[in-house]
Length: 213
Image 1: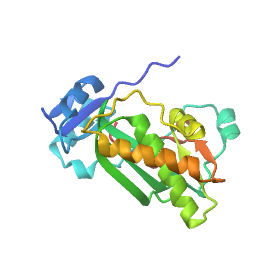
Image 2: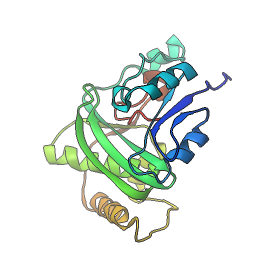
Image 3: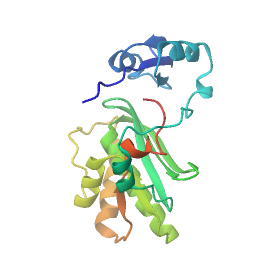
């Protein structure tokens, strides 16, 4: 088994700013901090250089992805179906501020975006993103498929429920109102849209990724 590569985290806006050597240290600076700005880098030098620069110049920019899978396995997996949209969610803290979006898989053009919501989780965001995409494609009478990198969210959609352990509160009421609407939509609408797991190890981060971690 290959050793996990170390990452360095630049925090431009947070409780404390600078370069941090672990995700836990980075997370402590951005949790419950409105408008937090952060991103991971492969080397300390790159993270330090980024810290001296502008957050907007780095978000969404990354080097070309090179898969570590064998050629045989890559051939078996094949290429993404670009007649599709990709969805993803991002959360600062767990629970924390959550947002989600859907993009055109090939062009990465944003098709929809919701949030940030208070006291959300990544699983809830991924679930809402899929349901939003289903409604979006049905309204357009589109035959495109949906890509997500969340097996949990796919399972929730199939079961037409959000099996979250997150407790409801006044703070996250708007989010749970949206969850309830999503569940109702699943139970009252038929759809033929295919939902597919994005092959991250073969293709890199899903195009809808927020580029923060």
